[in-house]
Length: 349
Ligand SMILES: NC(=O)c1ccc[n+]([C@@H]2O[C@H](COP(=O)([O-])OP(=O)(O)OC[C@H]3O[C@@H](n4cnc5c(N)ncnc54)[C@H](OP(=O)(O)O)[C@@H]3O)[C@@H](O)[C@H]2O)c1
Image 1 (tube, rainbow, N blue to C red):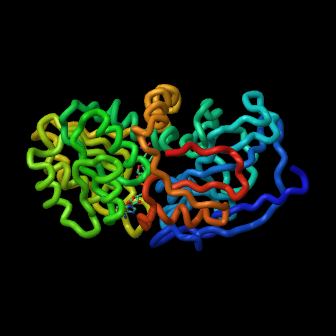
Image 2: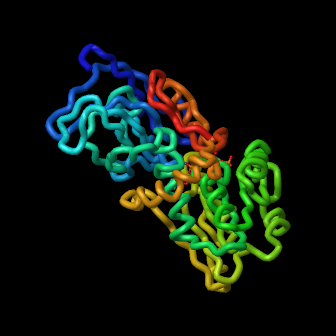
């Protein structure tokens, strides 16, 4: 790609109160060339994940061990990209890959890092490869099947219900025959949960008393709580857990990028009284079982029984805005960004 310009977003400033466009700086550089063991990728689509705040780094805790990207280096995120030149034995020009790439037009990489690069399975469009059939979908799929281990008829409550992970988990729970109550911010998200995702109940945590509504909607208690937000909702759910109840710790968005972290759960001893179980999962560790999740969900996506709800911005310029939407709660479904000039087909539904 000699002669081409590589537009990039660099990490410019640690955050204190919240992550915004002010934390990044736009530059234009020459396109780099791959060395032996590397390949050059043209980035096509990006995923946004709330934990990217750790890459930007909180001002008071962004030491070298924190995992924060050094100031002045390119911001990174999960992306689907096309290999354009390769000196790497595992990849060749034309391959469509999923990896941890820079927020830039072209990335040179050895394919290692936060999530090792892999070829996107045949028949999986890039938006699905980053959402329902990516790390997001793995969290929902294995969080449900391996950690929650649901039985038909159980009551399933989930926070962050209308986000990337939540929107898939809610629908998988319905497909498994569970009674589903989703907690989300705002009436548009609650409407989507009830009218599109098939949830039996929805709680707007911005305007409703979540504890009171949980008691109303789950009069016999909660069998499974799938936690995406952390914070006070976890305490409310622990308090209502039924005998043999399970808590799936998927994420804690409320703790990532705004102000100081809230205190930990105070009601964890409720687990003792119900012989309950609270267990985390790291979707990245399930990547070796990606094929299983794709086989489980691709037919559902193709048939429309499982909808891939996506919020798509267009153009690299909008990458900081896309990330910020996760913390303001503006996104409904999986937050994605499509590069300005991508020509790879997307999945529909
Ligand atoms: N364990 C794993 O391997 C794994 C993998 C992927 C994702 N995750 C985690 O799963 C969670 C959801 O990820 P996602 O990609 O699907 O994001 P998402 O839910 O699509 O987006 C974030 C959502 O979090 C909510 N939120 C933002 N700030 C909040 C705050 N201060 N308090 C409470 N809620 C807040 C907002 O929804 P509302 O408006 O509805 O509140 C926002 O839309 C994240 O915590 C993420 O780190 C874990």
